Every structure is written in C-alpha cells, then in structure tokens.
Amino acid sequence: MSISAAFLDVSGAAVELYTVHDTDALDAALDGAPAKLDHVALRLHHADGPELAGCAIRGPGRPDPIVAPILLGDATHVWTEPPGIDVLLQLIRPSG
Image (cartoon, rainbow, N blue to C red; front, top):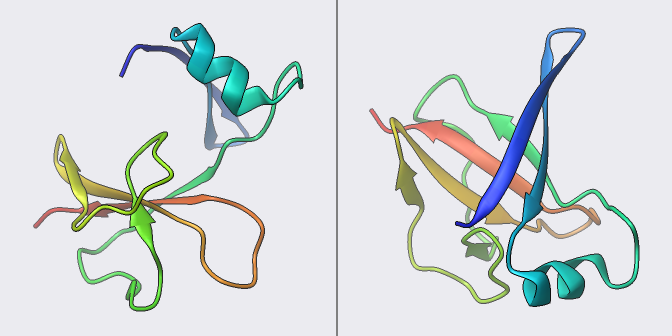
C-alpha cells in the first residue's frame, strides 16, 4: 500500500503512526493539516463480531464501497463510517 509505519505501545494499546508515500494522496488526506487521526482500529476476538448491516464498507484509503471484507494475513479487514459517529473505524476480525 506504499506506506511506512511505526507501532508504539501506550499502556498496552498499540498505536500505529504511518505516512503514505504517494504525495498527492497524502496531501488530499491531510487537507492542509500537518497530521490527523485517520481511523480507529478494533481487533475483534471472535469471527462472529458485530454485524455490518446498514454500514457502507470500504477498503483502506478508498472512499468507494467494496463488496466484501479484505483478507490480510489471518484476519479480514473492513473500514466503515457507522451512522451517528464522526470517525472511520477499521474492524479486524479473525478469518476462522
């Protein structure tokens, strides 16, 4: 995905800091800010996590919806903006 990332352990929570190498995409994402919160990621403990009915799901860095979660490693990933909150969520669910 052409990114560089570093992970910080903050009181047992992993915080990922990353940057995008595509300068046009980075400028568009930052919209003039020096940095910003992109999304909050939640790793679910079970494959039968929350239902995504009614939520538009998308891939990383994509504004357009996708049909199904993306398999990365041993988990599926989706990004969604549920109604009523103003933050992008990444849901990471075990694939099994």
